[in-house]
Image 1 (tube, one colour):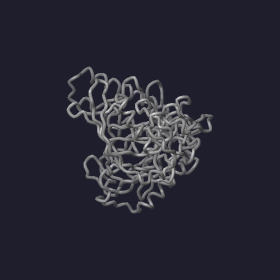
Image 2 (cartoon, rainbow, N blue to C red; image 1 turned 120 degrees about the horizontal axis):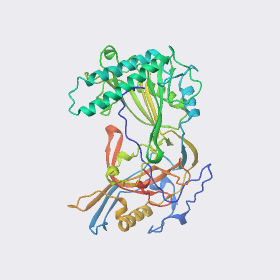
Image 3 (tube, rainbow, N blue to C red; image 1 turned 30 degrees about the vertical axis):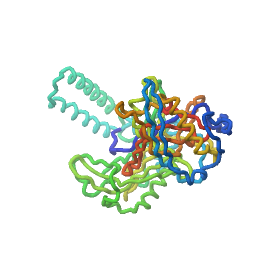
Image 4 (cartoon, rainbow, N blue to C red; image 1 turned 90 degrees about the vertical axis):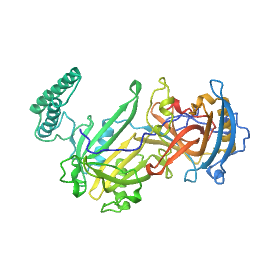
Length: 470
């Protein structure tokens, strides 16, 4: 069905490789993060302790040279502050991706909608009146082709032929359709209709496949059936289509006319997230909800909340997604297929009239947690980085110019990275990871753009091969 909400959300988070070490969970995997497993290139093994050991860590200032794959000497400059998560400890969290099957669709529909009156909303089950409206839209589109000045007449003929097939298909469906919505008895389709707190919503399940049938991105979204029931009063009677989107500017400059406080709106969003039963435990930030049409200026009514998979208030998603890594696309090889996305995030739009829109991407389920793991000393990690960059410069795929022959780093961050279990498809672990990189924070978008990164498992010192996992 046609989406009524224009969503401009943040990009999808990336996956990462952790060598041969994987976290043990209920599915029988084993792990050993003993000191003996530390990569041999640590120059000074100064012990393993928890997160508290980094509390007084100073910035890393260093410079050395390395040789690239073409034999050119490149200078490596490090002037990197140390950034730590706002937590008392780090853990390893094993998860599995949720399969969107009949049971999952039924659970979501029955958890989110108020009553058991849940209806099919896919095109094969729509009532006659709604099919007739869709046919009118298709007819208007078909008629518009004759008004367009198209140079390529063969192309025009092909799209008109396709539109004629669609019109014929609608005619056949309209003739066979019922007059009312059909109650859902099984949950083997991807579109449903139901009510929540007195408002009608469409629920859509979707998936995007990568190479070889691997599900790269999937999820579920909840759309207001009639968005004009939620929009500001000044837009209710406009003839243009009404949109809403997350505002990406400075929140303090926005006159938010929502009748709810941000805390009150968040309570509504919290209830929806809790009802889904999905593992989006960390509300990382919020933005104003912007409303617009094709011919009006923005007005602001409501809030957009972002809930991430995480632990102890620390997001697994916010530290970076694959599109936040600036040399992702131009350095990824054709032989390295896209795999499952790591953007385990739920976005909820709320105003005084209730939930306007919600979308849950990449639902996951926690399998087990290894709590308060020991971490390598920072000195050891720095030695690993320096040795690896020097001896294996080419494998990091840095971007730099032939005029300067210089790679710089300004941030060393301890974050969680999601890594896949190669022996058990669909299982992943969020692992403490040190990321050295050139970071460019954008507070307006609550994100950071990262260039030229080095990723090190903070537990065993193994190098994480980013490109082998995303």
